[in-house]
Image 1: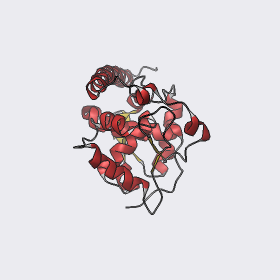
Image 2 (image 1 turned 90 degrees about the vertical axis):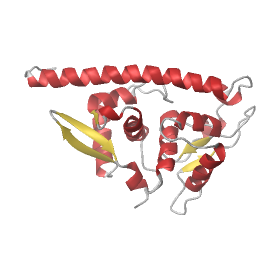
Image 3 (image 1 turned 60 degrees about the horizontal axis):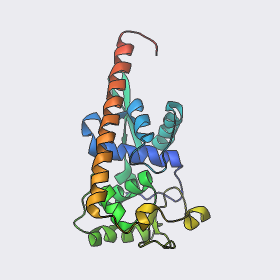
Image 4 (image 1 turned 90 degrees about the horizontal axis):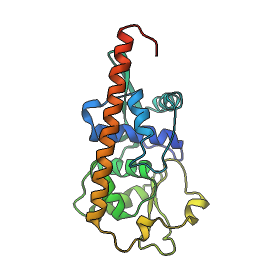
Length: 227
């Protein structure tokens, strides 16, 4: 298995391939994804940082570029083309590491505690020590680090990890104020878990809307109707 030279992915390319991995695990009945479902996943308002507002044209272009790098595979699903990821093979890292990278691509820099909670639906780690082992392996790869531990921000209790598949951290990122999630003192894993469960419910509804849009588009195609 090969390793990708760094940096190489735009923000949208990273979002597209990460959404494909996420949906494979969270809504496997709709995977591989249609373009409509993929756009909806990229533009989700929950479980995303930053939130994007992208178009079908932009996502299609990102898909074409990712296909050239073998990171995305296109297949035919009736009248609708569908897309799947090829992350594990191309990156040459374990599934656990891919899940961590995807969570960082979807949600931005995170502390170990945040990362473990947010990654849970993609890959469950027995404890922080187990997860940190995979992060440290990604950070010390001889072929090039894929993650980096950022300097601890003023007032923050923990340092944050970020992925490097879109390049090194900017000065703005290194100096931005700590997030409320990183500095709150009264929060708990239980509260964070409840927030994550609520976000998942919203995500399920968004996925259902995308599925209905797919069905409508296919029906219109079969009837010979133009959009």
